[in-house]
Length: 185
Length: 237
Image 1 (cartoon, rainbow over the protein chains, first blue to last red):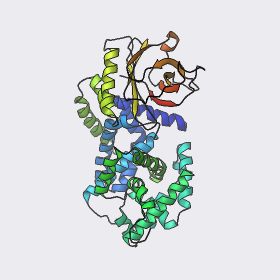
Image 2: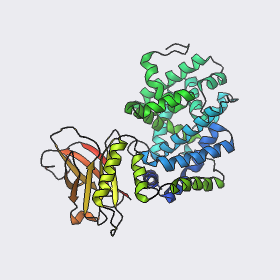
Image 3: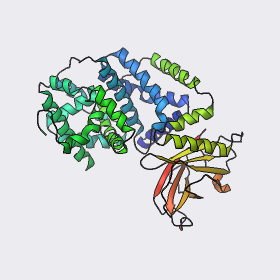
Image 4: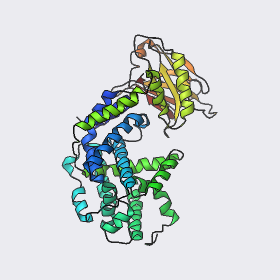
């Protein structure tokens, strides 16, 4: 299926879910659950917690599908955002500061794999993101990637990269500031 | 900005959306951002910007198929919420209520539109659409009768006293479809429009309705000439 067809099929399914169509929810689940489970599992690192959160994600999709605005977000982005928000909230609620692997290990996993990119449009967006991250200082970019993928707090990132908390905040904020300018170009 | 954790107002202040999306904020700060999102459209678009742009990072995460029992648990949870919805009409009202902005007026407009089209059985499913502006705020609710030959448009929000005419357009589904005029809409009150027979068959689910501002009397060219102030897709009830 080409990029636009896949995207519009997912968007159409979300509209049907908003109108109470359970078959459409199942279709969305079949198309996206492996991706979202991967994202949630990466953040929570516990299969049983991740399963709970994944269930919660699709129940949220069922309840909130009407808030999806196809003019504003791509369907997969919208779903990933819900999954990450749920996983991060669960992580924060557990109150456990996690033992973190060194950041280099996270980077090895997080390098974009072109083969995994299914959609042309997403590929272009990702190329732009990769280029803009590439323009940042390497440690700023690493911290931003690790924060996004692992849902780590400033404190955890500072510990992982062995720098003071203030330094980590400053790295990430500078990185985001530059990233915004680059992404808008 | 200094390395002691403080930021200058110029760069720190508008990064809260990025920090929220990135996930580095603590629970209280996250709740604070979420409270503000409902009231601050600028912050909501900033969050949407970062979700869309940073979302690509998630492609780096390997997909992991969840265990098979996960779907049955979701289905059970969804059935439980679905059972709480008494009828399909209330189901659709819950759907309209899902639009957080202007939800009270929107629900009122939806009820008005449903009342106008009536709930009599017809040869086809009644269709409804909310037409939202670029900021996402719903401006109109439109409903197509079950007979498919007339359409009710109810304004869900007050419009400015713009002297221009408000014209309603149908864009059928399918590639390269041009807008067809359905007539002029009055700013402050519901109106019933008769659908020309040649268009009635094309007013199906997923067709788009759009509203544009035109010179008095309507578009002189037969195509929208002014700004499109709202649009939305028709959905079966």
